[in-house]
Length: 90
Image (spheres, rainbow, N blue to C red):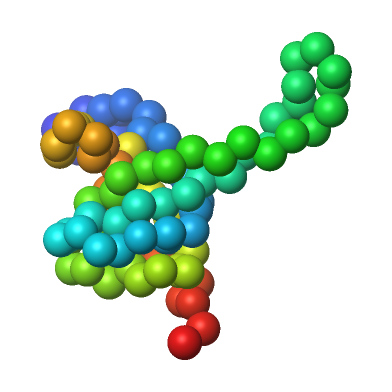
């Protein structure tokens, strides 16, 4: 039984910065990726905005957080908060 749970599937993990905490039990996280441009071969920075479920409302604006992919929880929300890795300075 425990072996089946371990092989349930790979869930994506991302690290990002909280840019909004105005919603109830939801934060918006900006995730940064650095990729090589296909044609010009220059390294560029691409940002993604993820809506993250925060059950205990522990993340605040400016915090760095680790998030994990999960089942769809609403129209836009399909990530959940794993941990707050670095708190923002007040």
